[in-house]
Image 1 (tube, rainbow, N blue to C red):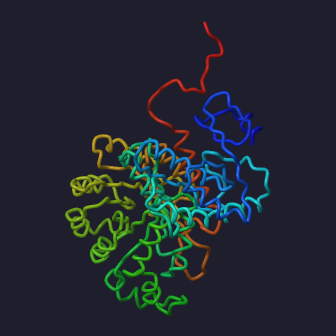
Image 2: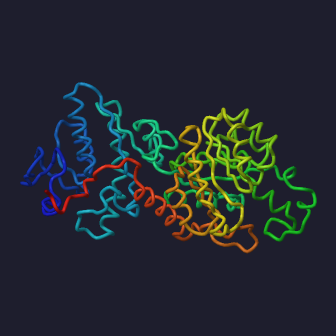
Image 3: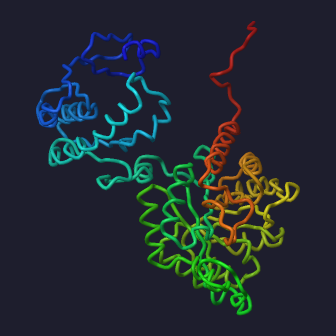
Length: 441
């Protein structure tokens, strides 16, 4: 460990050590090391309530000891947020660190990390009503808040199209969950793990949205013999959306849904949908769109497939009082040919967004892969949407461009979007730290 620190150089203002380590800068607090044994585990938790600072093998306990001392010196209670303590070795290193310094094997690290969860539970109990209020951040049963709530609490409120805050990536589940909560769980977790900001669903009133002839048409699926049987199975009810809402809050990811008719729109408002999506499919249902514009108090996400400039003008005027209008360039072909993607429209939306800050430019990708979406980000998209699925099923109504969540395809897609953001940077021209003059006067 000392060799690693010597190689990397000192970066901290305070080092707590039981060794003779002497950094070139920063303060040093020397404390004894108390090895963890089966007999000493109870003593380790008890030391948490003493005035002694000891370097424990469970290092976060030492951090909590220091926090108690700081609280006593300041004369007021301190709140300690424990971020990144999920006790899952397979999660890997923190992205900001990218590596570990231990020489133990992977199995040894896993055992050491997993057993620490019990010590945290004991510490949370022991520290009740003491000088420190310990808040675990995450999705565990003992977590007080999740990462999104932590960000809302400490980060300044962001505007939707402020480039410094990144592009929102939507994993569009459509109805590829088949109304199965087990599949919903797997898809939402996979989308979150891949880095998506939102998961999106669909809601429609089957009996009124389709014609009688369409519903009676033969359709082979595990749910029956007609298209009606199939479509009814795919629809989520109030209990299903309550399940989605709870799951997303636990995981720290937001959800919203497409409302294809007024009954579904009213339903989704009650269900807690973060936004209301109005898909290209209903662009001609202007009476319904006007109803949403007059009554919706949350962000609107609107895809513009199968529409022209006249529709754009109508939408901007009709939704003039919406708190946020996400305009997503879209072509409704599946898959969209490259020559019909027209990513340049995103640049146009970005221009009108400068004059109308309620508008957020975006791109709904029906083209293959990630390239069109990355270009859309370069053109100014603040939101990109990509269809996802969970494996291939012969009888399912899949589109050809959905990325399979059982493979790394969607994770790669999100990574490409993030890389595009980094490369694009900002519009402010400045000298960067990486630059230097080879020839100086």
